[in-house]
Amino acid sequence: MITRPRDFLTQWTAVTPVIAVVLLVLTWGRDLPGAVVAVLTVVLAASVLAAVHHAEVVAHRVGEPFGSLVLAVAVTVIEVALIVTLMADGGDKSASLARDTVFAAVMITCNGVVGLSLLVASLRHGTAVFNPEGTGAALATVATLATLSLVLPTFTTSAPGPEFSPVQLTFAALSSLVLYGLFIATLTVRHRDYFLPITRQGEVITVEDHAHAPSARTALTSLTLLALALVGVVGLAKGVSPTIEEGVAAAGLHHAVVGVIIALLVLLPETIAAVRSARRDRVQTSLNLALGSAMASIGLTIPAVALASVWLSGPLVLGLSSVHMVLLALTVVVASLTVVPGRATPLQGGVHLVLFAAYLELAVNP
Image (cartoon, rainbow, N blue to C red; front, top):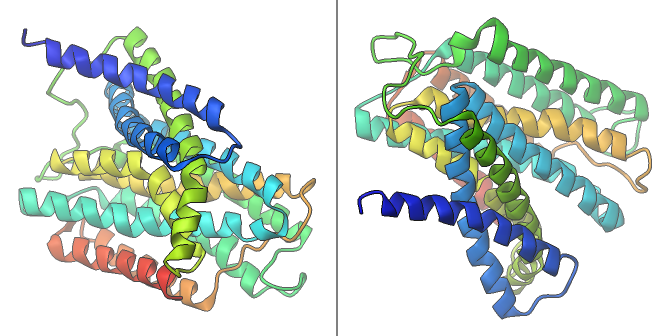
């Protein structure tokens, strides 16, 4: 009797991704009535929870920091595929889609997820502790990628507008891949201990002392269901986006709000997983998820759109506006000051959340 709720949860998280993918196939590219959109929204929310569950199973099997990497890369790969698909269908209207999506992901992860994780951990445990060496390396990589890919196009003169010339775009794409590859090597091989959770005395936690790790078969099943759940999350988010667009237009809001809402939906699994880790006093895992997602979003999206631009017509706008560059610069400065001590109080979490709120407010009222 005691194990029945757990068995039910396991069955529920196994069935939901399949239902999400089936609904995605049945509704893809169609105009949907309000009742169907409501059903899709419910399944979307359930798929998010299922994705988090299966990501935690995989993470428990492979250990940190590999578990954080699995979720971050899985979400980003599917997100990149969605961006390229929308760019292929959108024409000139999608010229800034890659820029808006990547910048939204950076602000959501580096301010929203980081701030929420630090706030939850510090309120629950007094202070949030993490490894400044690994977190600082991740932050430096994110800052470099964001500057090379999103800031420099505003100031280059080889192409009109905030765009890269073909040679510059190729350089940015290759640089993104190289930096992301170096980070993965550092994360998983050379300095893995920099990205492991630490105790309040600064000792690295190499082995978790709670439940036994799942079997390889269970982890492989969860990995498959995780992929299905993420496909469902991103695909259903696209399916409900026309309704979101209509609601945004009816409210008189700026069209960029649509991209923010979609990014929030897509990044919801990572946000929930990061907050859960923060509640367990594993803030390093939360930061791995947040900064790893930001890095993967830039490091995989820019090369993908650079390759897609070979056959896609229309301009590719990557340069940020002056307002967004100010927000990015402030985020990097504040995050650096947060990372250096290796511990944070509710104040640091609140500062990041205020920056995130400022980004949302400026998206609504640019």
